[in-house]
Length: 459
Image 1 (cartoon, rainbow, N blue to C red):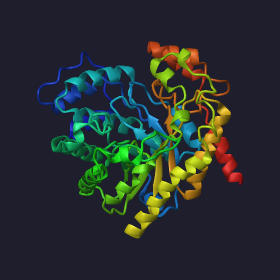
Image 2 (image 1 turned 90 degrees about the horizontal axis):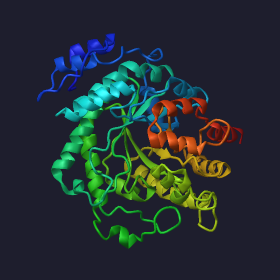
Image 3 (image 1 turned 180 degrees about the horizontal axis):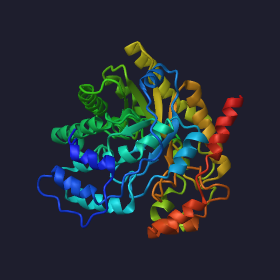
């Protein structure tokens, strides 16, 4: 592991003291420089009391279909501290049994720490060192809480360093870029292999290899024909599968225990699953897709959020209601889409002779639409998943104070409707103090998902 310097680990374990100015990185980063950087940080006080857990049996139960993953995605990538209270509610009120943790250099650090880290990271000739450094902070400060709460982590290995979400990107035809990407994923897997709370690596997120536009002519996503989807590069699926095969092969050289999760193009939607039949057999492989269908409904108000202007929110009758029979947005359309996944399961099980495990790595909708419609969409989306034995992670739970991403999720605020004007103002001005104070008064609510889970248990 690149950052396994004894002095760094000692400082992380004991906690640094506030120092002077951040030292400049030299051409070659060394342990002494990292020591000086870490001295800028607040003393590391672990959250929670670590409870040693052996997730070996849990992993076996997941792979055999005896344990269904139910949880959320945590996206705390900006300079905002995690909120211990919200993580405890996530476990005890909602009953989550895992999290998908989008990890980046801002995860679990304070504003000042992020400033130091950001300044260093931009100058660091080895960006991977900054990633590993942040992981050490997370491991010392936050992992004990995840262990105490029995919230095992699924970690995506891909950030935004490579353009895999554009089928015309040179990434798909450039062997050097692909090799650099593979090395990055493998190095990050090595880092996370030291985490006792981590049970799975999620490789690419919503890849769009050449020729993998949605193979669907219907109401749920985009209106491309099979011919249009295939006219550019019919071998795009195989390119993606070969990339997965190489990453898996290299990870298995040092970690044969943890689950590896792969998802299809385009955008992690079900229509690309046939291409994953080219992924080589691995006994600890799980397949994933993302459920945002119908896209026009689940992203209601997204443009207003992007523009930071609540005046741009369209009338609720314009894409803000579900079901919408005129548009073909209903449970039957969702079930038709799910049938692509079930067909893949049948083929993969025949191919390998073992259960094909499905985990829906993201599902969610914006918080601006009609609440009754949101509940109906949750039931129509999640209930069939449960019936098919698929795990899932809701996108996105804001366990930090970030205003960027928690526009997805009906689970906030508690009680009254969201004060959209105040919400957008805090986001637009990046007024973190005001946003944190506002957020403290509207703690996240799991009301709708809890209601669904209660209903499903009573049936």
